[in-house]
Image 1 (cartoon, rainbow, N blue to C red):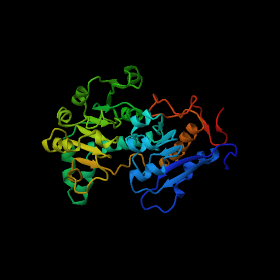
Image 2: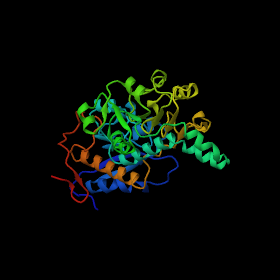
Image 3: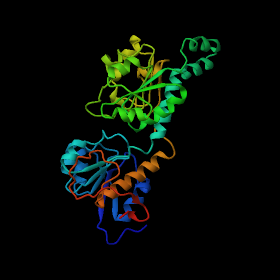
Image 4: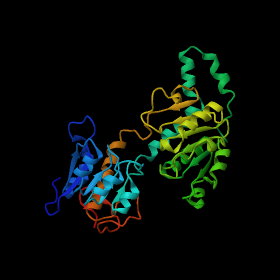
Length: 354
């Protein structure tokens, strides 16, 4: 669709990915940006300084392929919005953006069901020790599987503890109940009424949740409060028969402490899709344990994920550039450097509804 000739021209910038020769991968973002006269420009910058200089006059920045630090944000003279096509926001200094009146958007509800599916799949696989069972089959150890699993309690009636009770955790709770799991949740920022309405028992103490749970699933966002939220002291409180699952943010769990907990037998096992440093070093001891199941940060990956998250990213940026409050705001307390009205749904055919 041709851009509105009466609209002013906007510049939306993004760091060019390493090894890329073209920008043909931005078809989804452009569905919403081109109709409002916004041009998406790749910046081929090798340093943060070079990126900041090239982005100085941009109206919007897409936070992909490069961290958008406080230093970069301080150089942005016209930027109204920094857009993310992810749930996590740790690639952007949100506090710095807020100080400079820049709205930060994300897509917190596009691939919730996929991550919840992966979480429960990893929980069940770790509980039934499926990777080990498969290896036993490969090695001709047929007779060893049944005696090993015969020592495990039945799943029905066991307790799942959710750390944080956002969209993914709620979807996990819905999936867990048909398996007979009792579900607890710890989240000081969510009311008990919301938890009980979802048939989840509120737990006001993280320590008690860890002590009570047979499975602990981490769903906290990454910030200064949650970095290494689970370390030695917390892992030592878990049941020695418990399994820890993390499909959220890697650094919320102290990886060195997790290795110590596994070595000491403080917990029975772990199932991890995210790690403190990615990609995970192939020599990591986490990859060579019968009681640890790992996947390469793929919980959200389906054919739908990338197109939908990128379309949504484009719509959110377009809304802000047109002076409308976006659907998902990471920093709702921001005082924007432009006058924004309350969010109204963006229509690809008509632009924002009026």
